[in-house]
Image 1 (spheres, rainbow, N blue to C red):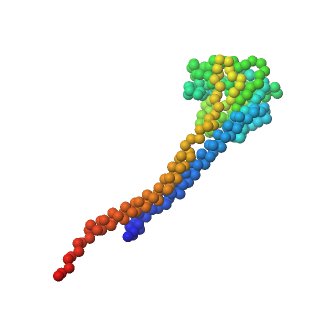
Image 2: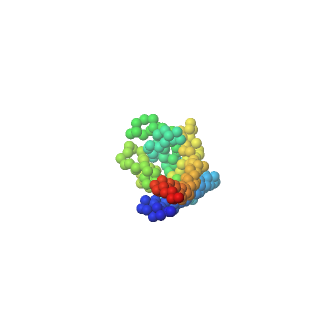
Image 3: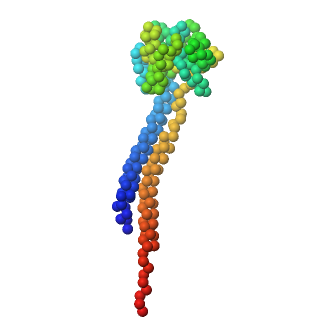
Length: 262
């Protein structure tokens, strides 16, 4: 009755089904883990943003690589802006996806060390080869507060660190490169400024990182598991259909019975 299952076609089909089931189950767990990681990341960012600011030098130092657990931590520092050595980071967008620059200003601390401060975004309103007009930072000694960020790399950002750019223009924020350029001790990483806000709203402060959306990973996980459950159901349906079709074909080709003699 079910001898057709031993045919080459059905053996191959059955093997494919047996392979697909664990693969789809594993893909479902992969999406589940991505969902869990996103939830954990959102919680970590939220905790960092809601924590009280700590002195920047408690979390970073010259040559220090900012670890993941310290990203977005609110830090504060007291010192003065060094506008003479300000640089701009090319090809950065704001919340409206307009292309411009990020303004990176050295902030000299009381002990002489330098903290790199990303003061925010300005539009690219002139030729790319010219240094843009930037609103001056506050003068004198002030206290700044912001989010601690790790040095940018091409591997993490996908941005190529192009050399030979116009004077005072860079592609990536690197405390090591800026330490070489300034000839001073520069704290590892940099700070995205959150206060004080610039007069007139320029540079435009960088918004907080998204820590509310969780994506569709959980829905994808459920989808893969439903696919996995559907494979054996589909296999059974196909087997029954094949058996029915074969029975109907056999009945149609069977010779009619001869009437018995009286």
